[in-house]
Image (cartoon, rainbow, N blue to C red; front, side, top):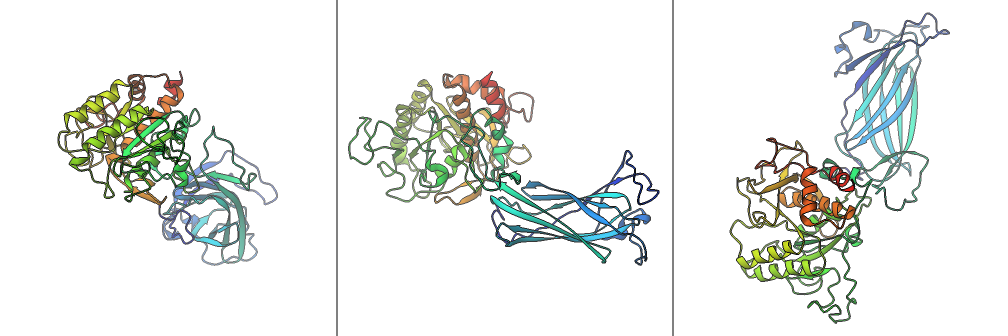
Length: 496
């Protein structure tokens, strides 16, 4: 996201005044509270645009008139974008014009940004609620100071500051973190991927953020297991002794600690030919553990089995069908409960591949597929198979994304437009595609199984489908299937 952790963000703002008008004040020494009248004004570019002429600034500064104001409560209302609000109280005897600036500094005193506060008028006895909204998000964890300084009719200054802390994303059921500034006003970091919030994953984390005995096999272009967000999320084959050159568990694969690279036919996606970013991106949507960057998966507590079949360009060739079949069998034989297939083909797949999908299904493995990215009324294979959960993609407005294929086989839909996740090396990126809708579904299914690992694949899918938000036509339809997935509802229903 632009501006996260930056030191030179450009900010624009709008100012909204909520004026709390009290009763007439008979004398400065006698102020009585009454039920206030609330008047809301949106400030235009010029003060003269205020319709009530009495609210305009006096043409000249009148002598011997008490002009006094103070800044009340300051709040940080949001981080994406950065939203600040504060109260200004006109406790003087005459209307006044106010303008100023807000300066944001880090804990070392380095200025991060200066935000101009355009002039506004405030009547005597009124309270103005002023809101500043940035164009960019600001989410870098740390301790900050917001200093608001206002000038009153050019002859007085008032100032107030708020020390606050941005805390990194925390998982409610994980051990608490010892962070500086525990006593400060604190704003929690928000997940950078809007899809995480849209499917209500943070609410689901109150019940579970995923169990480490639930394994999701990502059959894709390989996963960068070295990045901090995925390092702790990788499946570890406990029956294999690392790097001893022996097939300890006798599964036919030597030293397969995190999975197998069927592209290079070795035990690690990080050796041999270079990785394409796609697999890491998908795995991070499912199970990235939160760090200061704000990237977090749907189910950060579950484990990722890394199974690579795509080459360094993210391509699949005809000669790769046999390795693809072996990859599915590997996932099934080594304990995966879910297989994520963010892959599609616009032609029919070999019968031997279909049989591998059937074997996985009969062994109780949930297979999540996608519809395709051509915007057509056609679901591509393997999502077209009855044994695969076909997922279409939505945009910010819960509409079918323009690129998303659709059809009778669609089971559910999930966010897939402008999804932010991690690429190999740990760099964040924002991409669109049904490939990124599918992992949201895999993540929720992993949460469901974390709550009740005894569920069958059919039972878990039924819980998922009963917990959706219905979009489009009532009931199942060709664009959204049963509807938009919901992690909180799914987990809550599973817990009952």
